[in-house]
Amino acid sequence: MLKVLKLVIVASFLLASVSFIIRQEPDAHKSPSKVNTVVIDAGHGGKDPGTRGSRTKEKDVALAVALELGRKIKEETPEVKVLFTRSTDVFIELGERSAFANRNNADLFISIHCNATPSSRSVRGTESYVMGLHKTQGNLEVAKRENSVILQETNYKQKYKGFDPNSPLAHIMLANYQSAFISSSLRLADLIEKKFKSVSDRDSRGVKQAGFLVLWRCAMPAILIETGFLSTPDEEDYLRSEDGQEEIAESIHQAFMAYKKDMDR
Image (cartoon, rainbow, N blue to C red; front, side, top):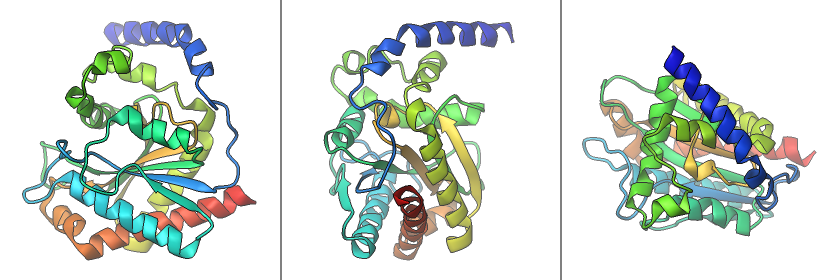
């Protein structure tokens, strides 16, 4: 307990010391308004397969869902500009994903992923994450797994200011970076989890907070969606199927439309 308390105190001090960096981020306090441009990020790719099931790679499911989601948004709301961080099986560095969204003045950033756990073959359900402090050890483990991709990047310590994907303290520091957009991000994440239940009858594990590098410097509302567990056989079957991928995309799409209607008011 004392060790955890010390960790939180040190983290608070370090967050205060870097707050001036956050304030200098471009458009860091841009107020959410109409949704004109959305960036859809298919997690992992290329040399980074992400997590795996017995027959399925996370990068493939993420790309299929991302492309289908983009198609649906374009079809129903052609006035919305839809951009993809990747549309093929290529490796994109985590920092470049948020930088791409910032360069294009995106109003929303949606990152698509799949979950896994080595401890059970029966865990199932969806999770939607926003930047924030880890409420449970499980949230931290998800963030550590998704952030570990930076180990495949050249000079990652310089690019991410010495960030260590295995350090709980580093993840706590990340949690402060998207505070300007937390309300809108939580709103979309909540809509998505509700649609997963009502549209596709999925088990929702709820909206959670954790420190994800891919959301770190997004100057707009941003969420990361774990669409299901590839480590659970029947969930893997669902996630790898065309029907399952279409259903996941439709759930996210309906949530996006409700969010857009609310923000455009």
